[in-house]
Image (cartoon, rainbow, N blue to C red; front, side, top):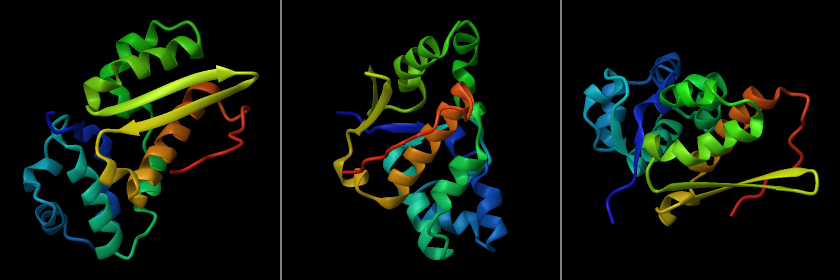
Length: 167
């Protein structure tokens, strides 16, 4: 099995959050085994576990326990920019969700999103090939907050989210 990866577009805004708390970006990246050029380059692939470890390290070192939620909240649909041409051709939310689920593997490998529509509700399930990462707070926070942002961007806030279940 190859190492799951994630596109650095999911780190958009991370630098400003770290700097706002007085953090040292180079030291944070190096502490998890990432090259400091990672935060300079756009659209680069990095190991998925190092992405999560980076969020965990920042949370601990900066005493910023909700950094993953803050990061996801400030991001918008631009984290899915490589999918924009396909999303723009969708005529409804269901088609857009289908495109996101089908092509998310371009941006994140080893990550599966399942969407089911049943009796008036939409269920979104996340699975990751790295079981040791799934239980980390920053992973769960980022995955949930990103999903909420994407769903609200597609649906608007007129459709409230009613429940969230964790491992």
